[in-house]
Amino acid sequence: MNYHKISLTVNGSQEDVIVPSNMTLMRMLRETLALTGTKNGCSAGECGACTVLMNGEPINSCMVLAVECDGATLLTVEGLAQDGHLAPIQAALIEAGGVQCGFCTPGVLISAVALLRRNPDPDEAEIREALVGNLCRCTGYERIIESVKVAAKKQAALAFTTA
Image 1 (spheres, rainbow, N blue to C red):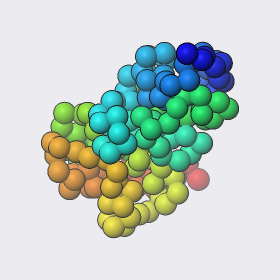
Image 2: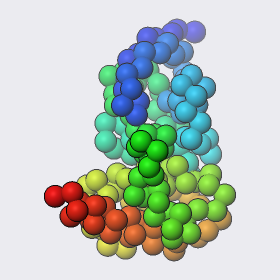
Image 3: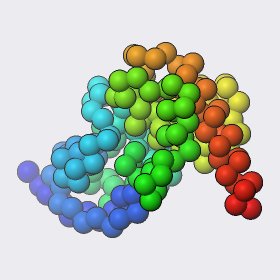
Image 4: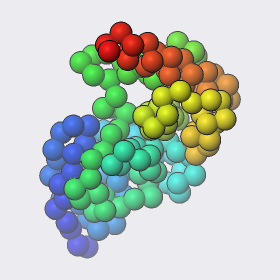
């Protein structure tokens, strides 16, 4: 087994880790960096529970080798809340009842963050398209979609008050 030393930024912190060639990013986050918010759902890139942002784009971390992340910037669900305050999308998911068992929630949150960064005022079709790779078996999607709409309004209000 070959091992590689990689350097990356995870949730704003510089990390240097040694990983085996066959370790996925998801396993590295969970097992090496103890960031267990990223969930292991299907391990086949189908459910989206392991979604993280890599260089600003949502990816299924179960389908990416850790060694491929050398020099990357990652955002996991643990990096959303700042200074003890939930991110607008986290607060909106709670407010709109978009959380049930929570297993899909980290991936949904990260996909929604990616959407809201590139389109702060998405319509319902755009929200559905952005979340198409995130499977939820508990709530259905109506409350999750409503949560993203609420988050968009919260972010717009926040931007207005800080401008």
